[in-house]
Amino acid sequence: MTLDAIATSGRTPAGPPRNRHYLMCRPTYFTVEYAINPWMDPAAPIDTALALRQWETLRQTYLDLGHTVDEIEPLPGLPDMVFAANGATVLDGRALAVQFRDPERADEAPAYAGWLDRAGFEVHEAKHVNEGEGDILPVGGLLLAGTGFRTSHAAHAHLQEVFGRPVITLQLVDPRFYHLDTALCVLDDTTVAYLPVAFSPGSRAVLRRLFPDAVLATMADAEVLGLNAVSDGRHVVLPAQATGLSAALRERGYDTIGVDLSELRKAGGGPKCCTLVLREREATK
Ligand code: ARG
Image (cartoon, rainbow, N blue to C red):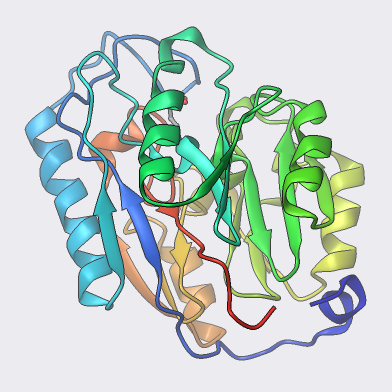
């Protein structure tokens, strides 16, 4: 998929679903004991058992859709490790390891890199702050890369070297939508959904140019982390509370499946945050 092809592709109905391979981390040690984004309040009560049940529903949803789910062992003292999307960026059988902005999450990085290495992925070391698929989203042949809060701009250049794909820098401006995957969701190879006001004016113009037929989300949907959704090209798993977005996606021909991750949202995470997509090398490339 080229830039031109993306820019000129029309309003395409949802295509066939793709079988996905996901990595997830059970929220055994989940809690909110520090605040590194505006959603987190260490004084608010957290029900870890409820978080576990909600997470299990998400995992079962993927299995019911026919996807493969691997699990990485959760580590005590790393309450945010459940957010596997921040563990790496994995594409073409290659993984770029992460480097967290905040010291509270630093020890997650080697755990994920080690798992990916043992699973046979070619792991590249991080050189700059980058929080994996939280900020880096492949779409078609491109990589959309967020910056402004977590992943540094310098990491975008490194990303392009590692994967040999054009990187599109997107500037995030609202601290509630601190990772790209809280403000934009990739629906298939040519379509995204996003919250325009979460981006700088220049980045908004870039998004309009690349995705003239994007689904534009409302603040009401973004505020329940509705854009933190996982699509296989046909089925979109999203927070149950994002009813407007769900209706808009259904109108476009996607099947939506709402899941309630309210307990994990207290840490600023939704379905996508809990899900790292493992993309193996494709035979025909
Ligand atoms: N508490 C975590 C943090 O602030 C939440 C991470 C959410 N992950 C994501 N992919 N958006 O780092």
